[in-house]
Length: 192
Image 1 (cartoon, rainbow, N blue to C red):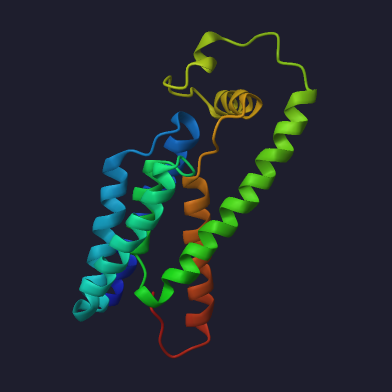
Image 2 (cartoon, rainbow, N blue to C red):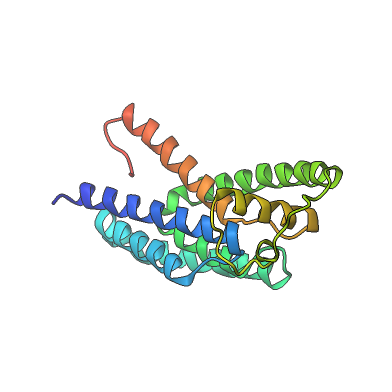
């Protein structure tokens, strides 16, 4: 199996883990460590396959990202799980793409923040449904279906709870992958 094919497989596995992390964050406001480890392991694997001599620079850059975002988490501006997940996804791409990746995540988070503010204003005007089982109020319960998940999210939005930032991380990663794929289609080489 070629390095490029194995790298692509690792990227697909990491996106699947990111989707699972985003769904867990959406339903429970927690990002499971095992999913962060899968993404980080896929990232290290990709870096070793595509640029083994530069892995130390990638790890150093990731450590700097953890320190910078850790400062934000210390001041409760971002969640600790979000810090770990962003650091893990930073390993998926070359160091030269870190700025574009972080910008993509920030833009996705900003758009999501605006959407949540708009939804909060809308939800405040809509009366709460008459039937609202206690299980919806308990965020630890597993959603039984998509409607249950949406009703729970409606309550979180109305209560002004933090938004699930793993969705923004996923959005930033997908944006980076798509933009790199478009660039690869028009070039002779690419970093995917």
